Length: 312
View (cartoon, rainbow, N blue to C red):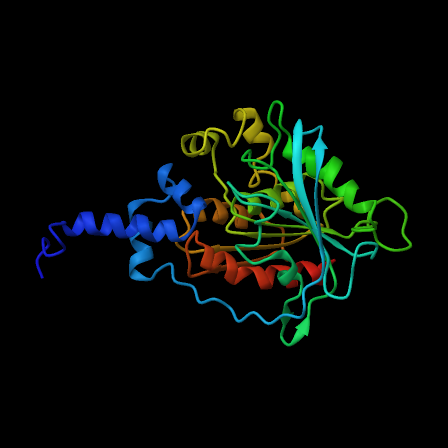
């Protein structure tokens, strides 16, 4: 077969179309990465030759618990935001439970933070034949500002000062019989891509509040220039990047249980490697085959939920 046997298309053109189609299959986040040049031509081809293929894990679950959704006006974000609180099987509003704060990816929302897996089903998963320890999960709309403060829009402040107190008023995230103070909270963070970075960032900024953090394919840059070239809206300034640099501030995680997972062909992998080198001893790191794709994200969700529920 010659290079022109594909309906008049050259092999280079055919691979280009295939790469874009494959990236499109990964979702809007994948297209955003391609458009901004985060995913180089090599990784676009990785979708074709199988380097990004990750087998979906078998998902066994009980009947899901209920979810409560609504909106609140966020003073930190200066707008109405949507939120959802999801309960595990056998529990309902009013139950006192540990709490996972879910942080969505770029372009996502409170309703889409587990790689397409409904939050209620995620909390109902069985691992090694046993149900996960009962834990609630809450998520709210954080916009596209990479979970760090911007002028007029502070998604981190929204989570810390508004979403978590909203949950605590419902009995979530508070250790039973313990007053406020160190060790009183049973709160973890979980996120994918931008949300994975956010999960680490919040734990670094509030290690007395966040007991455990799990990040799947965290979107981590190693310099402000690199971040600005890819997504100018990720940080308000070089100073904002320095303040929210997950790598530089990784030492703050000394007393936080941490799990980080990333694919070997993920374009953010250099940043993840830099973070891993700075993580305190005892952090769980899973670097395996995969790219910045939905299949890799989903393959890591059960292990991250199990990690968080075990430490909360």
